[in-house]
Length: 289
Image (cartoon, rainbow, N blue to C red; front, side, top):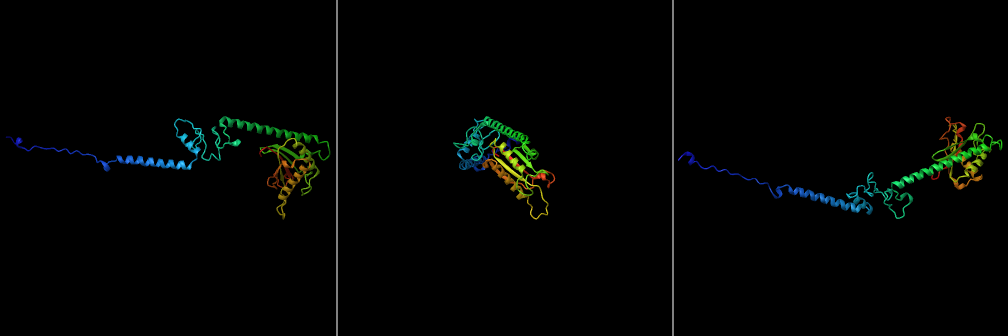
C-alpha cells in the first residue's frame, strides 16, 4: 500500500454562526420606539382636548383633514389658512363662516373678502363726504367774513384774525391776536368786541352742521424771571371764555366735546413771545373723533 492510502482522512468542520435572538437582537428597540411615540401622541392629544374649546378643536381637525386644501377655520394660523386665532373670542377673524356669538356686533360679523372690500369702500366714501361738508363749512365761513365787511368798523378787518384748514381731526378755525388789535383785554380773559363778533359769526356758520366742536387755547411765552408764569391758566381761561361766548350766542352746549389749554407749548410763530402765539382754535370735529 502506498503512503497516501495509509494517511488519516482530513475532516473539515464548518461552524454555522447564528445571530442572537430574543434580547440579543435589535428588533425590539424599533417596537419600543413606536410604542413611546404612540404614547407621546396620546398624551399630547389628551392635553389638547383639555386645553382647547370646541371651536378650536374643530379648527385643529380641519387643519389635519387632507380633503380641505384651504381651511375656512384653522388652528389659529394665518396666511393661506386664514382662520381664527386662539384668541378669537377677543379678536374675531372675519372668515366668512360666522362670528363667535349668536348676535354679534357689526364689527364682529363675518363679512368675507368681498364684504371687507365693500365696507372699506363705504368707509372711504363716508370720509370723503364728510371732508366735502367740512370744506363747504370753510367756504361758508369765508363768505360770511366777506359779507360782514360793511356792517361796522369792528368787523371791517375781521378776516385778518382768522385762518382755516381741514385736517384729519376736522375743520380748524384759528383766530389770533394782531399787534394793533388783540382778542382779549390786556393779559386777561375778557373778550374784546372783535372776538364777540367772531363768536356770533362762527355760531351762524356752525349752526348749519351738527358735528361736535372742540376749543384749544394758546398763549405766547413770558419772561422766565416772572415769579408766576401765567401761560397755563391764561390759555385755559381764554378757551373757557370763548366757550361761554359761543354758548351765549346760541351754540348748543352739548356739542362742546372738550376745552383745552396748551399754554405756550405749541407756538405758531418762531418767536416765542410774539403776539401771533396768542390764539384760539375752534375745531369742527369729524364724527367719531
